[in-house]
Length: 184
Length: 176
Image 1: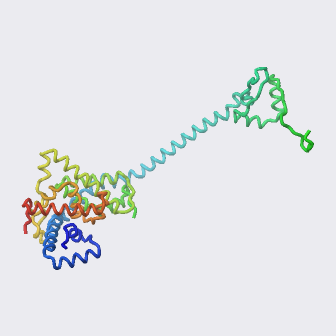
Image 2 (image 1 turned 90 degrees about the vertical axis):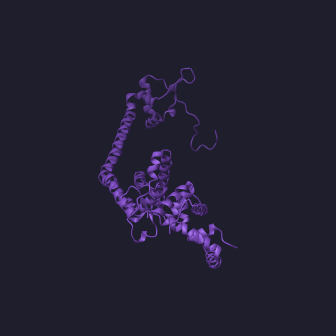
Image 3 (image 1 turned 90 degrees about the horizontal axis):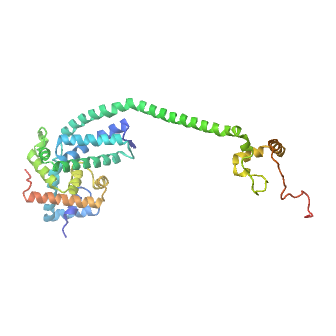
């Protein structure tokens, strides 16, 4: 059985692996038809590959183009690189400093606001929940205010509210006496 | 070895090793030295400006060959639509100074090869050029063109078959 051109081309390009390579070599030794076709393919391959651009022509273009690229990119790259990096560092630094200023400004406003409106902080939301004149402090809805309240003693809060003219009614809920096991 | 396309050392290394391949690929697609130089220069400019990290020199090489091949094919397509420019591209390339090695192959044979290669369909032409002028094996051609190795094998076979039939029909003539 003779070889097809695709196998011959693969053999010609030295891409045929064993054991097929050895089989092709053996076949070509005695099959004149395949040998002739192989020689034709080889002739085309040789003709095409040897028509390649010569090294002298390649080298002439190589130097010319490199000179252009060197002037336009490689040499400039050395000079610009430093400035470019420097600029990038400065840019990020400026952005960082600006961000820090913004944070400081916002932070200052946030921290200073209680002194501007102290009453609202200590009594953040005072509502008439029953509609009967009874006032209820809902400090839990305002975290900052609840923290302020938690820092003050009950006496201080009462003293402050009294000073402001509020009438305060305190009730104790779910308080059990310690050590009382009788369940009374 | 990792290649950073915008670093001078990497760029120089790649340029030194890959330039001849790119020049041959561009030339055997366009058959015009000036156009080929422009194409290869553009390929290296893109290589540098893209600032790509390649895992190896081979990967950089395949990328550059792919870009060069595409640029060259686009030029030929564009020029095909401009008849006047086609004539310029189809000019017989300048032959190098003849020496002992060139005796076997004269400019007439080169011209015949050029005519035959230009007549090949684009897919077959790309594979044949990468095989014969870029000295890539089937696997490497597959990586450049992003096709399977068996597909490369088939295309090489079809390209040579077409070339042979053109010779047989007398469309090109091999001088001996």
